Image 1 (cartoon, rainbow over the protein chains, first blue to last red):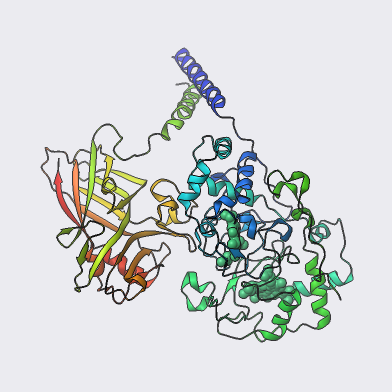
Image 2: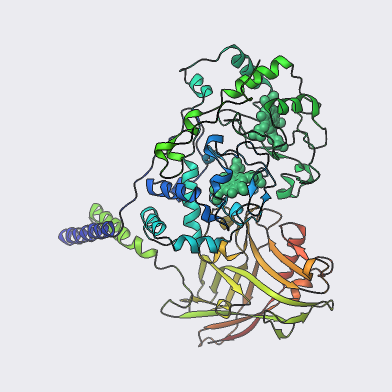
Amino acid sequence: MKWLYTICACVIVIAVCSMFISAANKTPIPTPLNFTVPAGWPQPVYDFKQNPLTKEGFELGRKLFYDGRLSRDGNFSCASCHQQFAAFATYDHNLSHGINNSFTRRNSPGLFNLAWQKEFMWDGGINHLDLQPLAPMTDTLEMGETIDNILTKLRADTAYKRMFAGAFGSADITTQRVTKALSQFMLMLVSANSKFDRVMRGEDSFDLPEKLGYAIFQKKCQACHTPPLFTDYSYRNTGITTDMYLNDVGRMKITRNPADSLKFKVPSLRNVQLTFPYGHDGRFYYLQDVLDHYRKAVVNSPSVDPLVRNNMPLSNFETGQLKAFMYTLTDSVFISDVRFAPPGYENRAPKAPAEHEHQYKY
Amino acid sequence: MNMKYLSATLFAVNVLLLPGTAFSQLKQNTSSGEQLNLTFNIKAGDATVVPGNTYTNPFGETYTVQKFRFYIAQILLEDSTNTSEQFFPDDYFLVDAGDTGSRTITVPISIKHLTAVSFLVGVDSVANVSGTQTGALDPANGMFWTWNTGYIMLKLDGTSPAAKVPGNAFSLHVGGYKTGENATRKIGYLIRHSQKQAVHNIVFNVDINKLFNGAYPIKIAEHPLCHQPGALAMQLADNYATMFSLGQVSK
C-alpha cells in the first residue's frame, strides 16, 4: 500500500511542478511590492489580499493616473486635479477644472495614506478605494467619459496590453483591473516623513512656536484631526454655512439622515500647507482663514459639533503657533518622490512649489 | 493507513484541482449535463414589453419603455423529496428587456425532483461593499451608482406625458443595500410536476405595471424620478416583489 502512495505523490508533485513551469513560461510572475506600515501606525484597512501589490501593477496604475485618455477629450487625467507638488490636491484652486469648462462641486483633497481610509469623498459616499476612480471618470463635471469608452481606448493600445498582462497575467483589460491598478498606485502614496514624523522618531526637534502649537493642537484639534493620520475619518459639522450655489448638505446626501446635515469628513492635516484653499468647497484661502472660522464664525445649528460650538477660544498668538505646528506636517520627501511622478519623469521630477505667502509668520 | 502520505496526496490533489475551479464557474448556456432554463417574460399587463413601445399603467398613465433591467442572484433549487438543494450564491444575472438572450438564465441542475425555486431580485450587500466586480456586476453595465456606492437593483427608464420633468423622461433606479434601505427582494415558488419528469424550463412572467401598483400605488406623475436608496426605493422594491408570477413549467 505504501508504495502506491509514494508513486501517487511523486506523480502529482511532478504534475504540479510542470504546471508551474509551463505557467511561468507563459506569463512572468509579477514582482511583489512591499507596503510598509510606518512605526506606531494602525494597520491599514485596505484588503491587500484582494489586490496584492506588485511592481507591474503599481507602474500600470501610475500610467493610468497620468493618462488623459481616461477623460472624454483627452485633457483631464487624474493628475490634472491631483498634483504631486500639492500632495495630490489641486494647487491653488478652490474647485478644480473639469471637462468643457466645468468646475467640480467640491475642493480636491490631497491623496495620501489612502490605505487607512474606509470611505472616500467629503461625504464618504464611496465605500472602497477601487471604486473611487469610477466617480470622476463618469462625472460630467470631471472627466466626462464612459467606462466602456475608456476600456475601448485602453484596449487599442499595445503598451497597455503588455502592461496588463505583466500585472495581471493576461492582456484582458477590464473595469476591475483598471481600478485595481489605480488603487495599487494610490495605496503606495504614503506620507509619513514630515518634520512632525522626524520629531516623533526622535530624529529632529520642534522649535518653540511649533512646540507650543503642538500643545494647543493636542488640546483643541486632535479629537478630530487625530495623529498619526491627522483625521479620525468621522463626519462633523464645524459650523460652516452652506454656499447657496453649491447647496451641499454633505454626509446627509448619503445617509438622508437630517442629523448628518452639513457634516463633512474630517480632512487629514498632513501636507496642509500645500493643499490650500481649504474646506470642502475651498472657501478658505489661508490657514488663518480656517482658524478665524473656528474662533469667530462658527454658525450654531443642531448638528454642529460640541467641540466647535460657540466658537473656539484662540488668541492671535495661538493661531500663529498652531500654523507653525501645521507647517511641520509638510512631507517634502513625499511630494518629490520620483516613484509617484509621471512615468518617464524620473530624471525631471516636479520640484516643490516656491515658498509663497503661506510661509508662516508669528 | 499512513496518514502522512495520505495527507500529502490529498494536499497535492487539492493543488491540482484548484486551478480547475476557476473554470467551473457558471456560464450561460455552456455547461454540459442537465440544464435548467429560467426564462423571464417581460409584460405590461397582458402585453409583451418591447422597448420603444407604449403601454398604460393601472393609473391610466401611458409610458414608453426605453430601458428595463434587473438583477437576479442567489438562485436556489430545492428537492424536498430527497432533501437536497443546489445554491448558486456567486452567480449574478442581468435581465434586460432589450436583450433577448439575457432573459433566459441557464443553470446546471443535478437534483432529481425540483420542488421549489427561489432567487433574489437585486445584488446582496456583500457585493456592494467589496470593490469593483466583474461580469454581470461590472459597473460598466450602468447598473451602479458611482458617487454613492451601490448597485441599482432594478431600473426602468422611459418617457411619459405624466412625467412633468425635462423631456417627460421618467427614471426609476431602485437600489440600496444598507440596513433599513435594502432593496433586494426574495422571490420563491413551489413547483408541482409529475414525479417522472425532470423540469428543464421554467417561465416567469414579470409585469412592469406592478412596479407602479404592487404593494403601493406609485404614479409617474408623483414620482417620475428615483435615483437613490431610501423610502421611495423601498416602496418600489416592495412593488417589484409582486411583479413576478410563475408561468409554464415544462420538461
